[in-house]
Amino acid sequence: MLFDFLKQNNECRHSSIPIDVDEAYCPDCGALVKNKWFIVRCSCCNIKRTSHTRYGEIIPDTKFCPNCGETDFYIQEVDKINFTDVNYAILKKVVINQSKSAASQVWIEKEENLIKERKLLGIMK
Ligand SMILES: [Zn+2]
Ligand SMILES: [Zn+2]
Image 1 (cartoon, helix red, strand yellow):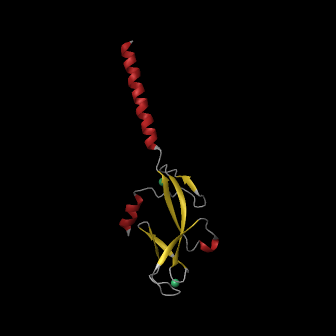
Image 2: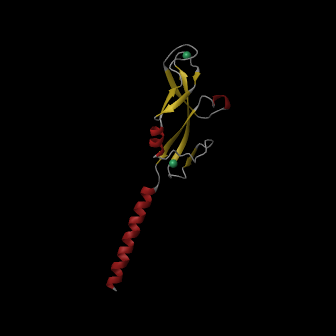
C-alpha cells in the first residue's frame, strides 16, 4: 500500500485544480486538465453502485450488486454532478494537453541560435 502511494506520488496528480471547474491548467505541471465524473451502475438493475479507483481504473466497492446480486456493471460518464450523486461519483482528472514546455524549448533554441549569430557578427566586425 505504501509502495503504491509512493509510486503514484512521482507523477503530478493535479491536486491544485479545484473540483468545481470544468477544466483548468494545472499550476504544478502546466497540463490542461479536465475534471470528468463517472458513476458505476449495475448492468442488471441499473442501480448506482459505490466505487473507487485502483491504478486509474474505476471499480465498484463490492463484487456483487447489493440490490440484485449481479456482478456486471458499466461506467457512466456524467456531465454535471449533483448532490445526490456525490457519494457515488468518481472524479478523474484527465489530461487534455500536456504542458507547453515543448513549445518553449523551441523558442529557447531559437534564442540560442540568435546569440550565436550575434557572436558571429561580433567576430565579423
Ligand atoms: Zn499537474
Ligand atoms: Zn443490480
